[in-house]
Image 1 (cartoon, rainbow, N blue to C red):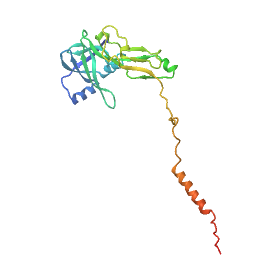
Image 2 (cartoon, rainbow, N blue to C red; image 1 turned 135 degrees about the vertical axis):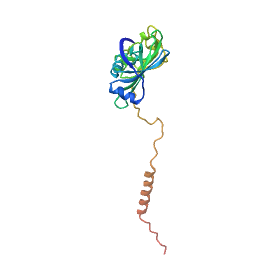
Image 3 (cartoon, rainbow, N blue to C red; image 1 turned 90 degrees about the horizontal axis):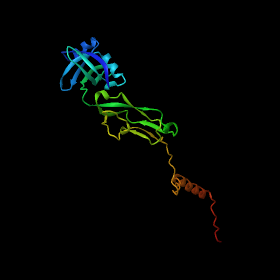
Image 4 (tube, rainbow, N blue to C red; image 1 turned 180 degrees about the vertical axis):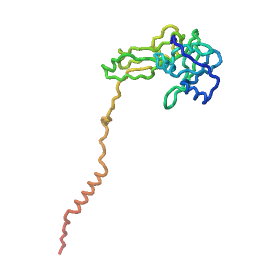
Length: 231
């Protein structure tokens, strides 16, 4: 999305850790501008301006003007940025020059709007598999996001990349069958039950052995028979 927004930048002649420290003292960060067949240019910008762009509705897809003191003024977008691993503040930025007459490939968020009927009425579960698709279009036609109403979704309903409506110069780059979200049945635990006709469990060997021992004891207790001698 092209915005009427201009960010100031200053040329820098040196690079390295010492230069980065010097810029941080001045509340700036190092950056590089490249693209459209021109040589890369090292600049310095305010991290606050970058944070504002990233927090805007279009985020990293925002196209704005970069006004380089003593250099060019050109439309750019954020190509890449590096954050501090602990503090999460921005340490470095890459700007990509943009030719407004040429198509771009960008990833755009897909927002699911509404509560699916399959969840409210059928007890299903709504699963979001991915939150963006990739498209190709002219810079001025990059949307902030795609908003899809999923209210009528029931169990078995799904949203795929091909279902997202595209307008103007937009062309789908993602696979058409890429799954974005769907409503599925809840998973139920099934208890194992013995099959019909299955033989009953055999009596434990310990029990059998106990019976034999009892029988032996009973036989030992039985009185002995007396045998009369013949005279």
